[in-house]
Length: 474
Image (tube, rainbow, N blue to C red; front, side, top):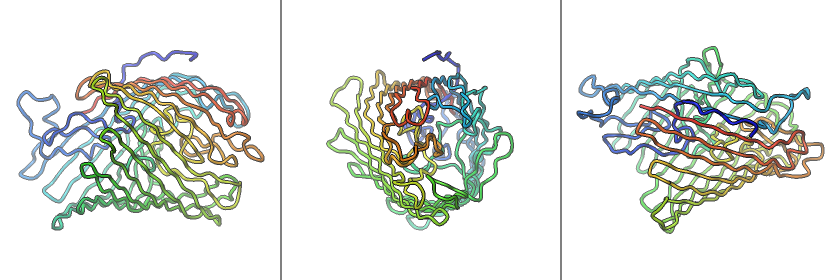
């Protein structure tokens, strides 16, 4: 790299930042911190003499069946980039700055009130800030959002025999499955949120989520308001695996967007429905696997939509007592248009956590992509994990574009299509360390080896990305 990032005293949590489950040791009396704080259950927590400094805030009794829980998360990350955007130019051809060092930070604070058996209210405030960022886009809507309601909702709960029903209304943040399609987007400095209605029905081993919501985009300096043209609705059902069994997700998710144009199709209002399934489990005692796929149908103006995606990963833990190694390999495929104009075959990724699957440098999205990865992780200590992953990134169709992380076009296909479908390779190194119950550290380095498809369409610099982060949570 041309410059080396200076270490920054910052506060962040690597498991939260990457959307991965690595909670603190958890018991019914001491639940672990979660990515979505409202999913924590402090109902059985009882403060003990000599306990943690923040214990008195986690379950404050207000009556026989009423209590209040308070919490916060303070995060920040220092980022160093070189070759950002493959060294591209502005739309008028003027060179732009592709190397920079900047810091992002955010603070979330919440109050969680339970009143009796049937009512719950939750408020979460957030502010997200960014130092001067001179890369393309400047300080983006994913970088800053000044003092905002991230969540503000209330629940009505009821028991129906052995079943449980929860109805929720207000501003909400949520994620489904392994966040390939719907995520609160924890890696970005600002978070996804929706206004509307959701419901959860627990029946037998199934948890069935229903939703009718509208996306709330970021206004960096004014109150955020929902976009009535961007709805997200449908049903997402999950059956948790029994010991030694398999888990299963089934879902139908509908989305709408206004004035959409994809790969030469005439602009029009979009309505899509994604029908998908996900399954996961273990094999041969030391193996684990996961497969997810979906089909999209709908229309953009007068054009029909017919698109798909498929993703899978398998891992293996060698039989050794030292370092707790795990090796893994995965595949991510998403359809692209086979010819410009007319009907649409480009998959739409919805609201994903793409960062977790297609490389930490965030060069591509789950649209017109054929990617594979292999990697390994070790634990030098119980509190430390080191992971090395190699990705290869290619276009599914040479007639469609390279799409960047947010789903917009990064590089359009030349006339007649790309001569090569090779976008490049990316090597990711990630180190995570739990300092103590409330504080986690992480850092990493990524290098993108740019391929021929990028070189066909302009600048094709390799990319270097170095980052350091921490979080404090209570």
